[in-house]
Image 1 (cartoon, rainbow, N blue to C red):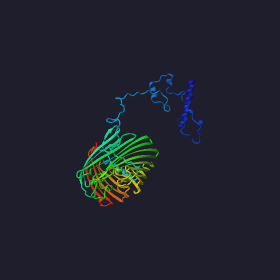
Image 2 (image 1 turned 90 degrees about the vertical axis):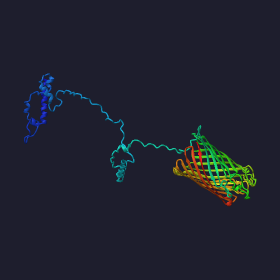
Image 3 (image 1 turned 30 degrees about the vertical axis):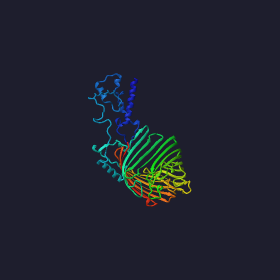
Image 4 (image 1 turned 90 degrees about the horizontal axis):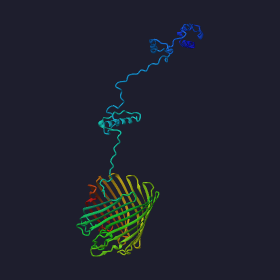
Length: 558
């Protein structure tokens, strides 16, 4: 009976363990006084009365013995404590499926897939102002970053979505009333015509026998601009003619033009071709046309025409630019006719001018570019002697240093200074010399107001007997203000001195005026102007004059 012996040993071991864990169940409740507790002192009498083989739940089932249904159910319903693994396996309970079956999770009705962000009050709403006051109070109390006050959501009537970026402002066209011109390939041509009507108090700029007259004036012009990524072409031309109704021999033309073509041979090598043109007249009271007799006066306005060209090469060495330029100019003078039938041969004073102009510029900073240049030229007249018997061929030299600068976006310009001298072939004529100062300063006070200050020095020819030439200096101030983008007002004022060196004569010229321009469309503009001019000569009142000119017209530029 091996199995019976094994079961008896297992039952005895179990009882011993239980007795050690709970001695009150198998022995006395406590140890007598003076008695020691040991395994040999335990009362084992109750153990002897136990059956040899204790019943083990499920053992009979494993042996195949049939148990009563009540006992089987009791074994299943109440397994013995302390033996949770004993007993038959419990059958799996299958619960009925719920009806109706649960549906998958979906967003609540009327809920978009991408919900809108939190609304943000308008800056001018009461909620935005209240939030601003709350933030100000927090900052004033020194609670920056330590306290976050809750903000109530604004009502939908005064809010916009917070995530929307501010709409970009439309780009404003720099000149919305500028002409469009005509496209000729990659060139843009601008043509205009400007008829005007006005009144001049002194058409011939005379000191005596002054007579005013109404006049009509017409100006036509062309502008050419290239639209190339490299190289460049620019051209400007203006021709005008004024017709006086009440004064004879006062009608006169005038004009100016220039041309520039830049050819980029390489990145650091550029070649420039220049052309220029001027057309002007001499006033009858000019010092070079005056006679000793008060009754003999000039009856025409002699023309002065100049044509010039120049070629220059510019080579860049990093920030250093070196330029060498050669020029040629042709000056043509018209004869003067007097009321006694005599003629002043001014055509003999026409001359050719040859010059060379080296220049070096260095880019010190992107805003400052100093330079140094020199001009050497020679003038050769058509006739060796002028009408008064002076040999006026000459050589000239001038040198200057200057810089272009941009102090801020509002202030920029250029300034230079140097010295010029001209030496004539006739020893009776003194040197024409003096310091030269040229500058231009542009100050944009506001987007609508601009101040421009210019000063310049020129050395020019004269036919005045005994005078070497004219050293002229002028200062001009222009103020341009745009009341509207199509209504521009320009105020101008200038002061000029003409020093006839060797002739002991000095002239001072003051000019002031205002111009109005109202642009109706890109192609049509209404213009009006007023100018005041006064010349004071050291030769006396017989060589001074005053003139006032008022004019209005229309400009057509398609």
